[in-house]
Structures are given as structure tokens and as C-alpha cells.
Image 1 (cartoon, rainbow, N blue to C red):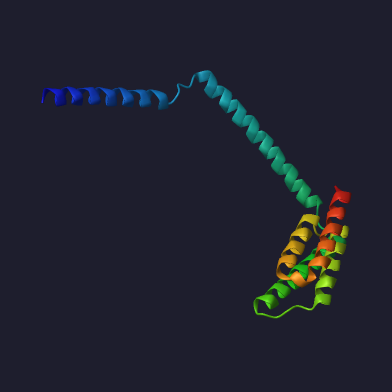
Image 2: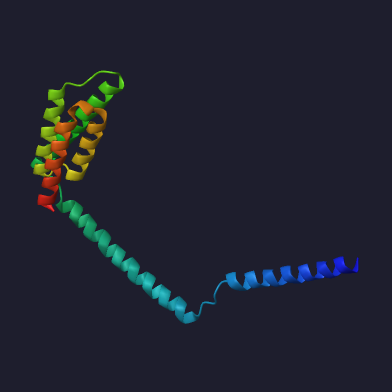
Length: 156
């Protein structure tokens, strides 16, 4: 019995010192008055620079209204996306798409990349998707991907 009491006291002391050590490690640091004033100054500077950025963004948005050519490119891109969606839907219901139609879409996609209406990375992603769902057109789609990668490197 004497041993168990001694063991209990030792375990209690170890637990107590462990808790004190944990409290010491995780206690919040003392913040001096100079740190507080310095952080307020930094926050004020940040707020003023953010307000300036907001004003600049609003000015850029007012200036950057899309031109009719840009609107046309956006509409062509949207039609291309809709055509890709139609192909995907037809495949999901078990119908094979017309390969000429897919070839035409790939060509339209390349023209949009050249005109700047679609990024080369997005076009490559669509081609990789088509390559997965249309293995019969693998060779043609691979050629299209190579051409898009060349366009990407030429523009960057």
C-alpha cells in the first residue's frame, strides 16, 4: 500500500509539471505598446492601398467594356461549348457522334485559340476529353493537341 501511494504521488507530480509546461509553452505572448501602434500603422497603410486598388479596378472595369469583336469571340466560344456538350450528351445515351462534326469542332476550336477567344490550355483539355471518349479519332485528336501546343508556345 505504501508503494501505491508513493507511485500515485509521483504520477501526480509528473502530470502537474506537464500541465504547467504545456501552459507555459502555449500561453499568449505579451504584446508591447509599440507593437500595437506599429500594427495599427501597418493596417492603416494596407487599408489605404486596398482602397486605391479598388478605385483602379473600378476604373479598369469602366474602361474595359468588350468590343464587338470580343463579344463575337465569346459567343463563338459559347456555341463551341454547347456543341461539345451535345456530343457528350449523345455519347451518354449511346449514340456515336458524326466524326466530321467533331473534326469541324476541333477546327473551330483551333481558330478560336488563334483569335484569342479560347486559351490553348482549355482547348487541350477538351481534346484530351474527346480522346478519352472517342478512341476511334485518337490519331486526329493527337494531331490537334500537337497543333494547339505549338500555338501555346508561339503565344507565350
